Length: 207
Image (cartoon, rainbow, N blue to C red; front, side):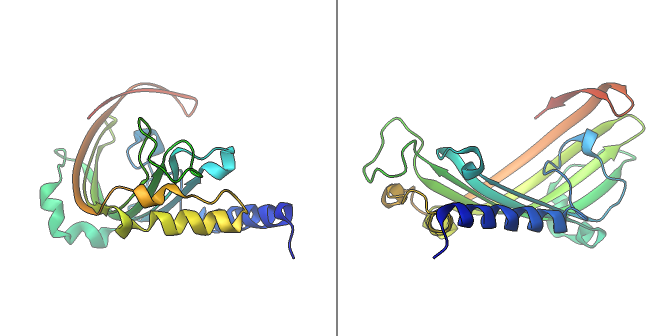
């Protein structure tokens, strides 16, 4: 039998190795920030979060994002719904996003009124990053298609992680939000206002 501490160390090592391997192609997950601009038009970003690393387990409890940017997505018909700046350098991509949310006490089976309900979401996202680098302006627009509810497998994911880490059995999933379709559209305009080399960057953002 492997002790709880040994299992915890093994899991942490796995995630560190996994993220290290992907760091060759990935950067911090946030497509929108102009300060995180990449000069290439093709890359992969990978992000995984879990409250386990912070010793807590409520509200937004875990999620992952896999984002791929490549010129092959330039012909995606959904791009016609996405905005672009004039005389800009554009990047195109798609992403898979999964997020899990719980109430404050996951071991309680009853509904916790006044708390965030148990729920999970799964999205496929098409996005366009439109840059005017000479003016330090970025327009990031995206269309999200997905669903909320048991289809998103939030319960399965959290139970699996908690079994691996010998953690609390999450019992509140019997009260999770029911299945439904979600369509989101997002547009963010960002402008760098003041910059000192790589040390300081002040920017404004409008959504």
